[in-house]
Length: 227
Length: 362
Image (cartoon, each protein chain N blue to C red):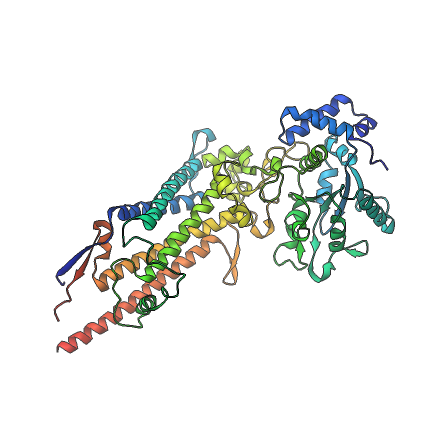
């Protein structure tokens, strides 16, 4: 193993906290959501008033959902106004042809084994930035909007229904919105597989300690192994 | 014509006492979600306003809406109201037929221009100039457009007229389209359901008659008074849902005990209607009350959200029927396979380049 020649503080504490709270919430939301869709456990015979089987799972789902939303809003604030060059939206301009240019192409080529050298980025590389935009930003936004629209159904005319109820006709009815929300939840395991694979692979190939960086905040530049 | 008679006159002629008439007015105000202070307005409208002329058209439909309306087993406050609206044209119920009947429709349209209500049961075929639904020698598409032109408002009875129902279920061979897709410039109130509850139907007419306007509509164009909450919200089995006590199959003990039908595919949690409040046939029962899951008949495209007895709809995916979970598992599997393949290629490449490095060294 080569010697550490540089330590770079990449992920500041708010970003790391966001990451782990987000991870916890998404896993909890996926599991409770799947349970709500297909409740497996059945209470023993008795009076309904003794049990809170389904109500409890829904309650937990809603609690994690609101933590998830607050955390997401915080991250959005941090990306827009935080003084943090590795966590800002700043360089991410998918609408701009220049963004789709050389750096993005080079990174894609590298992932497709079309070039031998690996472009090196301290923060997110362009492909990672795009994946995060699609899965984390767009995905979370959709899940939050559709989730709040369905949450609003519990209280017609309430705040959530007033602000997000338009999602229901947009998706052609409450059932289709539920279905799409359910389908959307599968983004999580897909994303987790790709995310973990990419992280471990970069750690093995580039040895930038990207895995531990989300706990410690530091990435390392390592000296090339003596040949 | 009887159209100048008021509702009160009709009640009186049919031997309904004033006391019963007032009871009917109070009941209607409750159905409509109005405050008790509005009861006098309803009484006044019923007593003094001439009956609202209604033209009732039938397109591509099964007549279950009319059946719901005229078969209400209970004395017939609904039945009475049905006779009380000045139903000046209804090709299903009229004794007259042919050009005589069509002349009547045109006469009403002229006489009450801009004042009559157009009630549409069923929808119109739009493919091939609407040739798949011909009524009275013309396509229903033309008749609908012609009659809608001078209407004050349109009531779309049932899921067919509101959302399309079975006629425009996939693949919709006749191009059946709900009224709101064809008529764009008239206020339309959608009263979905297959069929809608008769009290809901009479309530909508009573509201229009009393206030001269359509009732408050929700985002899908349905009267809020009846479609504001889901079946689920007022379901008497809701306690079993919250407790997690579900019927696992129809031959289970839980079925006998009347537990929640959620796992049997009940669409109550996503269906907006009054079945669990007003119930059917004069408050006798409703589907869940007789042990059958709600099929969501008042929701858009409910035929394409099946099967009725599954929670998750089946959707076409990669050439066969699938559901959200199957699609999700396939996608996760594909992601995992992709990652594994990518890892394998990475390992091979690395081994090669290491060998290369070693060769260089040697």
